[in-house]
Length: 237
Image (cartoon, rainbow, N blue to C red; front, side, top):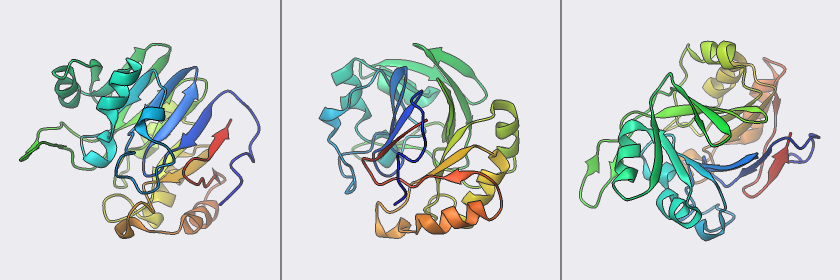
């Protein structure tokens, strides 16, 4: 894998926890989509996560993950689309409910919820219950970071890039349930971040793709630098 310390700086620290899970230290300590229990590549247990905010992109189990336990342990605020936030609120957790197109401030960080093309739903004991819609987040901290969530390619990614100018994009590449490499590379070209970090690949055989093929595809069409991390690696900007 590429050297995760190849970029200098220290305003924000991003740690990949495998799949779509990231720890982002940008003043507030944020964890996004903390799927650790059941994730064969997770570099730590949920008990070891320290955070102020838990952000959930959609209701599937490989994204909600250990959010409930992490939020309770840390007395953290969960940021989620309205339906998921209401679900967590009924469990006695602190939530900030929002919907697509909005920007809210949580502690010292602003979150803009943007569109993603994907399904959503929360797995109950016997059935799938309503989970609103899937989303992505533009996170405005010391750097502007776009966690795309699970999504297909869509033309309005250009508008997200134009409006919010994310410096760092966290991009799903695994195919089957999200964009594949070809589509993900085009998404990066449309968003035009300074750096792209691939995610949502390699966790299971169905999404076992080569991140270096993504890096090659991106760097063939745009100047964005692709930084490839192993689970547990971090990079500072």
